[in-house]
Length: 539
Image 1: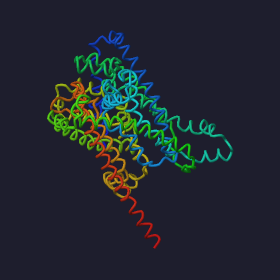
Image 2 (image 1 turned 60 degrees about the horizontal axis):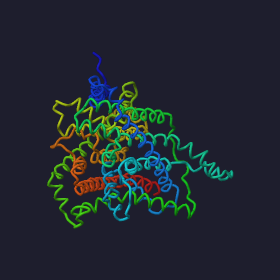
Image 3 (image 1 turned 90 degrees about the horizontal axis):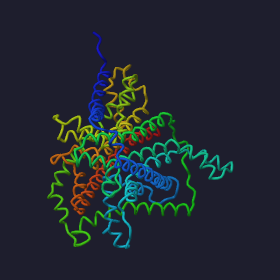
Image 4 (image 1 turned 45 degrees about the horizontal axis):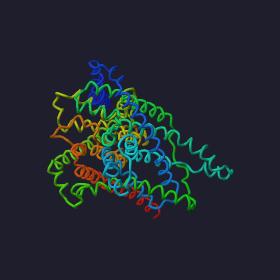
């Protein structure tokens, strides 16, 4: 009897895992449509209004986010902006707190009794379309900034130098060199940011007012009315833009060509350019810091705006309502997601990046499919599929939901890293009698450890602050601390909600700082043998 190779068995097990963790729950949600009059729901005035609002908000916020992100990326990579190591940290702070906190921050600043409303005697209302767009921009522009700045950082300066020698004007250089170079990355950024905004319910739930979006409608129907049929219909609609973005990004990525830096840009002194870069960075920095500053003030006043007495009572109230327990839940969930997620991602990426065959290609497709599934849709599909099982109502299902929700991006990180390493390691090892396991342990893991640290950080930070995938799955015993924010807001306990937002930010900042130190130590450890070899060679 012919034995099935170990790698084939492992791939089949991993495929079965993705089938149970993603495909079958999604199929169960779609099967739920059979008992629902989807046509009636889609043709209703409320649905049409929510769909229109979602599209208008997402398109507007995406354009603004990309414009801001492009300016900031240019300032960091192409100007003499002072403190270039500090600004990216500041610009990415909004990625460390839940999206609902950004909406709440705008309410605290610009609401009817907001800090800036009272200080500057502002009129009008922050609630509605403008508020959602503002909050969505605050929530999404850091993602676009990271994508665009990374691309600009590795652009080759040689074509620009040749253009200068030939006397080609700067505007023509921009249209003939820069725009073609940025075309594919910008397409990816557009669809990434658009999908992020169109599927988010945190910002519009907090600040939307009468401007209802599809994710908010889905949240209200499922959580408030327990109407899973209508939730499934809306979930299917939310899948459409995400799937389109996924397919276009996949095609765009496959056709792109990998490049490398031939020559870095030599920055010339330009005072006007650098002053403009500083002004843009300061304005966006204030935009980022104002809500966080409002959270700090709100946390330590008795009851804004009626009683501004300094107090620690809000912290005591939050912990009295189980904030400590829910924080522990979040830490357990985030740590488990990071550890298990990194392990599974590495194993999957090893087989997809370093082995060939139909099973490897299928496994790769399964691994990136969660990019096209919004968190709300994934959470609802888990409810319908796992309800009544031993997993339902436990921390384990929250770990699984978060891991699958955030799996694709870390997987692609390690997939790209393993794909760049020499493809002949295993073949050479086999000829020398060295097992695959030894190659992985002694060669591949050390070579990819910096990527693994980045993956751990990504899993942990996102699991700490997410509210979408876990909204339908958590109960009073398993609730993560991020879900306390909408609960406090609903009961007008904004001071406690502000404290919880700061708590999540502090945990994520601490983790990011620790991982930054770990990466620095690893990088120094990797350079030490190289320095020793060079010293021995010179002597």
